[in-house]
Length: 170
Image 1: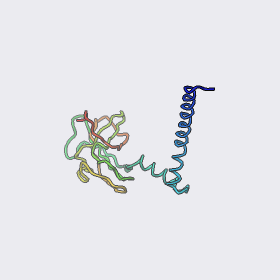
Image 2: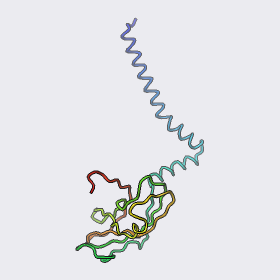
Image 3: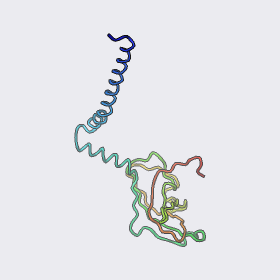
């Protein structure tokens, strides 16, 4: 016969095991249940969920035409000594409404050395659309971004991401 202390320990072990089984079952079946409820059991709707997740990851699509990058030594003024201007024609389309404002520091030009540059605030793109604007789903913005980089560098890519100012940022 078991004494009261041993029965309590066995009961605690059983309850712990039951909790683990229930938690494991919920962890496995809850996502499946939510998926079936959201899609109504249709495989087509499951594909739509995949598209929604892809859109969340690609909130904005940027395109630059093949001849959309020009190197210049003058653009309404001269660059600093040893530098040149890079003018990039860009088309931006929002796949989702952005919950944050687009500012010049959302864009970055990456050079062949891996260094990143922000566009100048006097870029034609920002003169046309403002230095801070909201974006709704389906909106399209077009314009030219102006960057200043060292004369010996070449562009490699144009990046776009949310910019959030931190305390250490000037």
